[in-house]
Length: 203
Image (cartoon, rainbow, N blue to C red; front, side):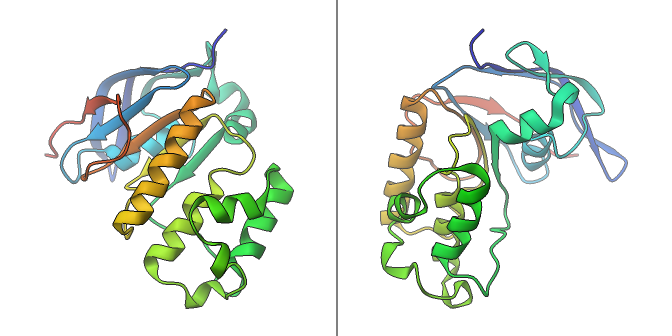
């Protein structure tokens, strides 16, 4: 069976309030979905549910026909989640950061650095990087290990035009390999042919 992500009638709560309910979606290899909606509509919450970081209040979530809750470790291994925080240790260099993750996941840290134009910054402490450079490092980390499912929350945060172009190449290569992308955004993303998922207005 193809590596299809399927959610049926998902609901989620935050702070005792229902953020969304009755939400269904399906994403097959090579597809991209854009989660659109105003602040508070539940885009970030949905990504965390899809990543297995939050349990849904209702509904089902499956990968290749199997409920992801039955094997959380397997779902974690197939998923790369990028939230608003870049999760970078300031004392490490970009090369050390990616080397650490490459030892856990596999992949080539030098190729990951190059994918987001960071080769020349690989030996600097991460605390000296700008916000945009740290975001590029977090995006480069996605490439390690070949996980098929990328869940991205405002991935262009802090990026300049040239970096958005690099991100577009990264996303295109991932999809060409059969990868799936779901991204929450308020800004245009370089995801040609992406399907839109409209999230409801916050109460």
